Length: 321
Image (cartoon, rainbow, N blue to C red; front, side):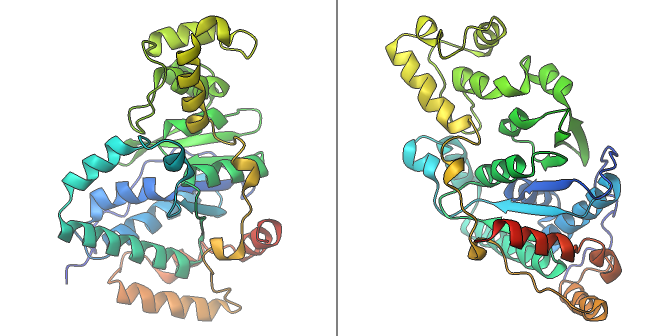
């Protein structure tokens, strides 16, 4: 069996911003998994290793071990509302992988989730919700001192310097950029709160959100910067057909919309983490699974630094019905 002992431990260059364990780090699970799989998927347990090791870097650089990893549910309300949603991505992936590669991908995902669970990382998945909805839900509920880890541009709408809600965006080759309001404007030429308007008008090719026909990014930015995209004025900007296109697209890209208010986290939406009462028991359990996974570059003691029993208990008390 190939092992991953020779992999570089320093996976990521992450900007330091001490949260002093007050901040919550919310991870877009599949988004991170894809990046780790692309790098380490050729190793039997490489993706699981890459995922955990990256969380260790976050803990060190961000001074917090309050993690929530959000995954997509089996069903998708956006797909039900719009058949074209993410269709381009799905078609690309269906041609890209062989049956053997798809099986390998599924196995790597299962192993990663298993390792996260044993380490003691909160994982949430809810039927009919994307990870986007869950991330939006927890971001709004925590309200302040939140870092969202994802390169999905939709999350830029939450960036708020005053509340210290930021996005940690992977930039490739292990580099990450911590995005503030100024960074959002530099990237998109609109303020964070206007990101949904921009995507609803110009569209989002990555998710196959069509936007408004004949309105590209330049025109969208101009309309937004001039303050023309308001409830009172929008009918003067778009004709009836275009207005319908805008509203349909806006529902897909605006996070924390009416669907958000109906989210209720059930206990079975959260992966059941064994609450270790004894630190020695935890270390022994980690020793066994790391050996099983043939991972020698991570120690049980390092894993224990990721395990925040109090945070898990508070999460279960505050969120799980």
